[in-house]
Image (tube, rainbow, N blue to C red):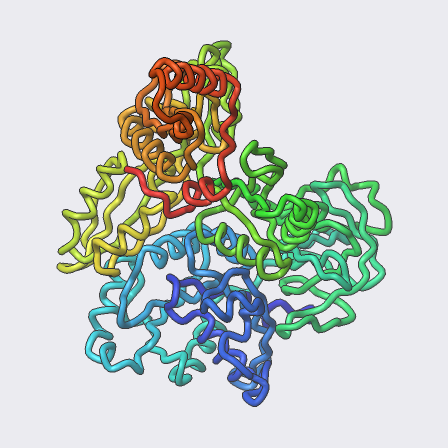
Length: 611
């Protein structure tokens, strides 16, 4: 369709479990994109098995719908987005490809932290916001509709009268939402330069039959099979093998026009070549003018915040792990990895993730889709090391830390955290955040019973168990979202664990000076319970540089070397005991303690304790 006035591009944004994917299902039904009899399960746009099992959206999913309104046919391009904070990168990419956003709020829960975060993101992209109150069929929601609409007005400045009450489950008022989309969402802008084609890649996936498939939003010009196009950032030339729409499966077509959302089969072998945020460009039949062409404003390259080592329990599976990560990277541009070697766990990879849920999803996909048995180390964050010469070095593992004599300072990542909670739990949440070295910035009351609390907290403090503890102390009512701020200098030290005098790199950690003693003492105590006894005393120490801050000892086995003697001179027994003593001393000097893998499994478990 070359007439952009009949095209509307929009996405659905919300907090987790507020009903985005169910509402998308009703849209598919109402527009007859998928017949009701073909809807074998709910959440038709959640294509992955993991998404359907967990009931969460992990990947953004576009779909093209055709709908007749007031006698005219419209094309509605919808992008369903994830709700979890770890996948907010997917949301930002979806927003950049749209002119409008449906903001879904659960009528029983009200506004939550991720609702605010996603809404502010949409406002920053200058999108038209269409507010929707979902789940009005639930008995507990019926009396709260007015107060929830007022809550949306107070928190986001959206007129309470414009909020549409909807039941995505039963299909109530779904057509009213589509009508509002057609009336309110702006027509796609088309800024054609004579003969120039431009499209933005907002996602790219690897298909084992088609190769790399780029999901694109067209801004000017048209594209069809057989065209020669260029990627402006990577300077690669592509012969287009196929173009088409999402219905929601691939549906080939002859040509894509300005304002439309579709896919382009590039024939490339790696997603790295068709990078998300790149511009596909064409002008005439040659790429001579490519140097002058200006790419569309893309996305910042996503940086992983959380790092963990991924190892196979059986080292022979290492090549399979490498291949599996390569294939997974093709469909997940936010995953990063590099080889890592551990004396205890063998060969593996240091992987970068956007958060703990992202890490869990990757681990589960590796284990399920590639039949791997994995050990994942405790997640840590990246640090910036300031060297004496003034140079800065980014490290993702404590093992990469340079010699302390070369280090002037260590900077750690800080995040801005928004916690939305009932006022009853404010005190407990304040205590939790201050224990995690958080700085309270300000508070905003949504109404008499609910408050948004703003904190700045080191990322390392919230990465392991913060969310679980927040849910626990607030009886499940509090919700949080966070975004990266910057790297800040802190009183940080590298904590080493020594077993029989040897450093165990896999157990090293970068910790705050005030917590080092507690963490070190906890680690050595637990190691004492795990490491098996030997014929000699095994000292276990926690150290900062050359200073030992905690120690435990595993006592030696005592073999009765005098048991076969009967009576006689006592000097014979003494002689044998002295000989045993010398042997143990020699063994202690030469002996190596081999840590069993179970020790690492117990300590590297993500639920490991520690202050």
